[in-house]
Amino acid sequence: MGPQNGEDVGVATTRKTFAILETLRESEGLSIAEITRRTELTKSTVYRHLKTLQELGYVIERDGEYYIGMGLLEIAEQTRNREPGYTVAQRKVFDLGRETDERAMFLVEENFEGVYLYRYGSPSNTMVGERRPLHALASGKVILAEFDDDRLERFVERKELGQHAKNTITGQGALREELAEVREQGYALNDEEYMDGLFGVAVPVYTPEDELLGSLGLFGPTSRFTDEYLYDDLIDRLWDKAGEIKVTLAYG
Image 1 (spheres, helix red, strand yellow):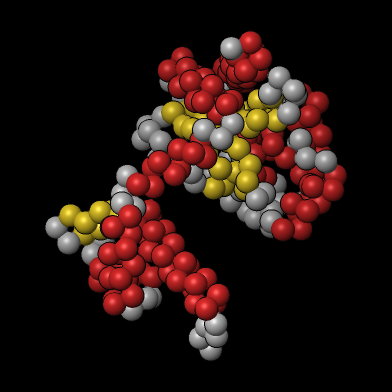
Image 2 (cartoon, rainbow, N blue to C red):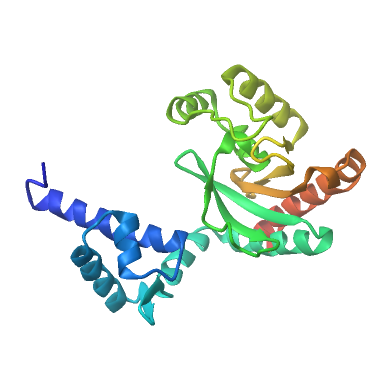
């Protein structure tokens, strides 16, 4: 059954617009025919939406192929500038990446998902804005460790503890034990929990009011993250950078 009133029609139209934008985000440089195939919308519907998005600057067309336009960049930057600490965190992410030659990132939580706000590494910035499961990342577990019991319970109810790699934590009891350890030690590890062969380490970043701003982390091949490298270098670097963010926010 199709939409029954003006409000439903408006919602359906909005969903179609974002279906097209999401399709272009996943694979830019698509023809109308390819967008039609991927979205399962009619060709005329895709054409109308693309023309409107072009007029608004959110989509551009080159030689019959469509790309995300710069107009969306301005909107996205509003998100990354929402908190003063985010821009400070950006500098520290790049500092960490240059100092360690590892992939560095800053993660925040939205709707019980981890969102990459900044990333340093090759290929640079490919993960910015992408969402990840909190329970399968070192940076995500740092954030979950800050949840009170009620919020953690809501998280578990809404988000399945899915298996992403061979060591992913999928049991509620095991996750709670892990988070208790994270709180005690002040950092979290990801030992092939999101992707086989990948290791990560992260620490919490606090505001001067001791509120969680996000998590700062490093990740790379498991073979490179030896105990000596991890405990004699990386964790201390992360703590230092997290502290620098807090001090900068407090004193400028």
